[in-house]
Length: 441
Image (cartoon, rainbow, N blue to C red):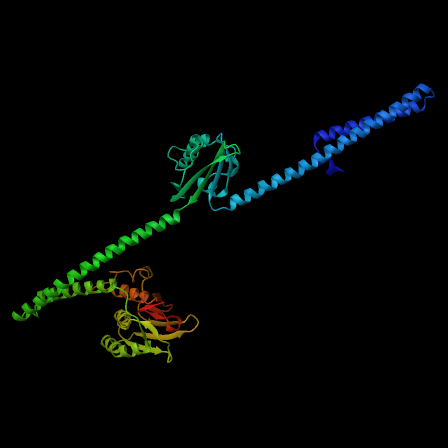
């Protein structure tokens, strides 16, 4: 019964109260007349009974209609509430900023995404006028640009297509594209403005990054051409210096050695830079064990000269790989020579080569027990011209990584737990790839 009275309107409750009051009056009148013996009173009692019954039936019909209308109203109200609830969920689930204002400039809808952008709470901003917001925010507040677009569309009834604005969020610049749409009713009259705010920060950063890469590629191409042009006169100068040195017997002089050493350094730099910027290598099916066997005498010779030990442990059966043979030999030699240079007398390097069947990769580890790599240098040793050697060019490891990456592999370095460092090369086995027009796919 309590739920029934809670569900009906106040008008229905008043009507029920009056009906019950009339019935009570009827009972009291009937009680008074039934004790009377007058024929006139009995006649009037009959009239009263019939009139009261008519009134009760009439009022019952009205009460029924009122209750029915209340029920219809409640169900419609609940449906509207459900619709509003569902629309709020949808708006908050959208990864775009949404704001709706009416034709008087009052904020009717705003989702959580836009609230985060504007750094405002949702409840205080609902029903607030955009003109008031514009006046409340600081003069140099970037958020005002969005409010200005809303006001402009509201006053001119013109839609805005992809207007870019910038807002600082947590001191970081964020870029947004704003679209405004005029809301109209069935009579085509403007009823408000809808604004959609799209976050284009990542795409903006990607564009800037691509532009930066294009500039670097252009600079690299120019530098490669310049290095090629420098190399020819350097070779000529070197030849002339050698001729003059032989003619005047200057080979043992201090100045002659300085000149020849500096020329050799310039020549090594230009040659390394040309190697770093040259085009893709020519791939051929090769067995890695054959390359290592060819290099072992040279590796042992260099190790013996430095009085260090280099051991090679290689799996017997290895799959073939698609590589540029000379390029891979250059990578191995660069890494081994770097390791030997970093070792002191009686220290050692172990070269371990095996096939990782799970990932279908041929892996090579160059592990030494030297002094290791400083943690702050681990991310820099593969950068061009970075070196810790006094006479180094800083191009060996940069060239090596570029060669390995052109073979769709990886080259990286880690420090060992005990001491020393390990350089690791991963190359895809040929069983995963096919060769076509000298390219791996």
